[in-house]
Image (tube, rainbow, N blue to C red; front, side):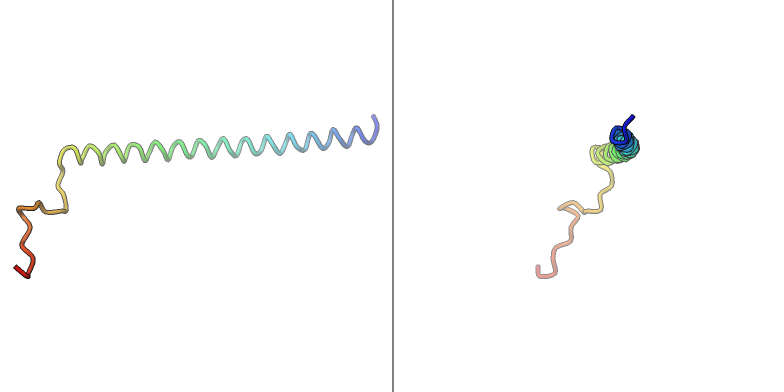
Length: 71
C-alpha cells in the first residue's frame, strides 16, 4: 500500500470514529430531552387537571374582593 493510501484510510477511520462519537452523544442528549419532555408533560397534565377541578385559587372572586380604599 502506498503511503498516500494509508494516510487517506487513516483520515477516513478518524472521521468515522469522530462521527460515531458525535452520534452517540446526540443519542444520549435526545434521550435526556425526551425524559425531560415527559416529566414536563406529566406536570402540565396535573396543572390542567387541577384547573379543571376548580382547585383553590390564590385569587379571590369578584364578590369576595374588598372595595378599594377610595370608595
